[in-house]
Length: 400
Image (cartoon, rainbow, N blue to C red):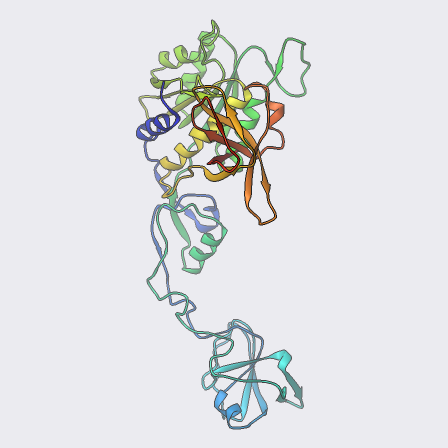
């Protein structure tokens, strides 16, 4: 069997790079940038006032002047005024361009205005440049602002808009089809017999995808019937770039998914990974470039494989420069692994008195115990055992 690292490499090797589309900047949050963005102008583009108050010439203060007649008021967005004499000042607002002839700002709380004259507080010090955000002190025109491959978060969107980018070139999101299989699965809210199970995996998968910003997500449920599986899978392969199946990939008589996929022309890349849970994980590619992830049906296995393999693989296909590879974290208590397989163990995240995060493993009754996942933040990956890993052992955390 492949190791988890080898499985990850195989998936990355086979997934094609997703196409590029141009979208309005306001629709790009969570997308992966596929072009470099440069500053449109110096940042800030002018000597910017950073405090409400009055603008004046610092040399007048140094010469002993403490009262200044207010010449006019200049708001943010106004054409800059020019000081008529050193004995005058200009009432100014945050964000305005520094008026000509002025080189310092005195905050409004440090002045008293009487009959149009601003008197400075007696304990005040005024120096040239105070409360002035100097032009190009952040970035010069033409500087690299955002690098291709970045996942666009709120500050990145604001920065791109500030650079005058009305549209951005980003990776096109794949269309996902989440497919649950099995005659035993019944929808939430529907009458359920004692021998049946609720259809829950698909809801978890769809929620995880949408939580990460993927918008083109649909789901379907297929029975354990070879003919129906073939027909519906063939149909979905024509409409969706990524198929994520749950169930039907083990060695049982009704584990029909691998054969149904083969009948649709999907080529198996690998089947089974040396891990627990999630050992029966199957991955293949259709001739048209569709990626198919067939995940084990046990709930813990399903969500583990999604977070460990599917999410990072899609990030790579979208051209992300630094795709998620799990966060480093230390164990909050010793953990014993009694199998020669890589172990994926659900955890909660605790913070100690110094603000450091620790992963506390949550006990669970195997890969079918989905109730144990409630309240957990993800899972850690432990090297193959048998072994006991001490408190403080540093490993990787994958969040749901």
